[in-house]
Length: 199
Image (cartoon, rainbow, N blue to C red):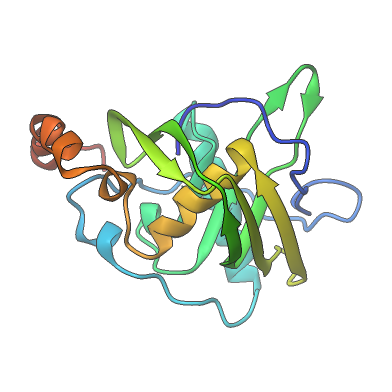
């Protein structure tokens, strides 16, 4: 998910950085997948164990997200990997730095309220739409250390988590808008399907 904005105060930190961080090998960004690629419509599989390979994948996804220049969330399916792993990095605001969140096997336990806000997607570049989503959510998952994580989120954090978890289920944000709105985007979506993207 693109568009870097302020991070919610209840955002947990991950253990990618910091005193007790996992040291990951230097690596390169992964290839992004774009609208029209069949992998974006597939359901990702749960990660049975957090091994060095999974940690390496998380590191590569973080680099890929940073490489986009404006991304704040990325799901493994967006780089062609059918594993239930998402990355959230809401960046820096008011001279306060926030650690990225690495979450394996995220599961939405509860959701309440409704709020409409504009969304975009790194896999659907230059297309945005207002999307209605729950305002407050509770999510469980596993961090990069293999430890359970419990997150109570609202605001931007909740929206990004919902957006990225949708990706793991083969759902795109354009699936959550009305048929009329999607019809208005049909020309742009068709161009994206026909476009040649960097390999």
